[in-house]
Amino acid sequence: MKKSLLILLFCAIAVGISAQEQPKDKAFLMFLHGGYGYAPNSRGDGLTTTDAAYAKKIASGASWNAQAYFRTKMFIVGLMYSGHTSSGSYVASLPESQNKLTSSDKLLTTYIGPQLGMNIPVAESFDIGWNVGLGGMWLKNNGTVFEKPRVLKGGTVGANLNVRGVYNFTKNIGISAEVMGLAASLGSARVGYHDQNLKVEYFPLMPLYQFSFSIGLKCSF
Image (tube, rainbow, N blue to C red; front, side, top):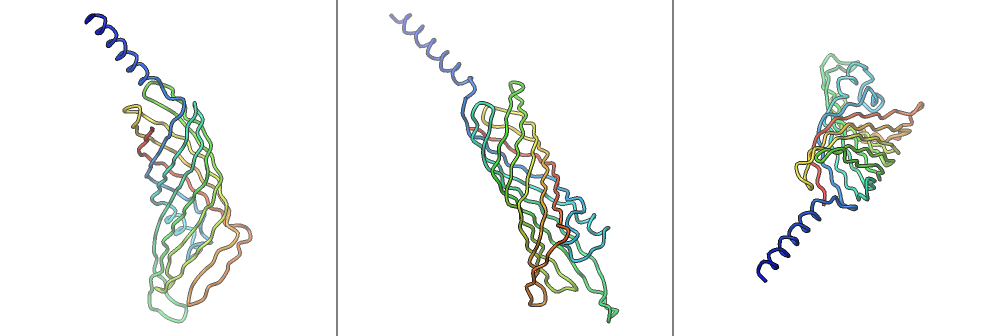
């Protein structure tokens, strides 16, 4: 009797372990990334100066994103939030004065949109994945012109493409490295300066491009 009970207990434990090791058909995935972002000379019309060298200098900055997905088999559907920030300053003088005054730009781009893609296991501890989406993209510049505040705000529709690789430490936790591209065109913006709030139209449209490389955490449950 005891021997039979031990055999049944061993079989139950073996079946339980085997079931735990089976990959789930459905799961929730979450990614949190941070890294480097580059907007290649794409925001010159949104800066406080049209100097090309300055626009190139201010294109680099920090980038981050948070993503949440429902996965079924290899396909994923969910939502992504992304941000990019950069800042810079320069010194210039008023036409009627020799006094040097500082002007600056502090850019923030945010993007949020639904996503579709795939998460593909290629080895026991390694996955590759991609996702595409269409969403809202907003540009804000908390700048100064000759040391007086100048705020620019604008919004448009953009698109993204993300490609990543994931190393899984366990079935629930992994580390992810990702490359992302964002693209949009801005037709107009509101500019506040000298107690005035003006609408600025861009013809041709102001391009908003962003490329980023980031690493972060992947969780599944």
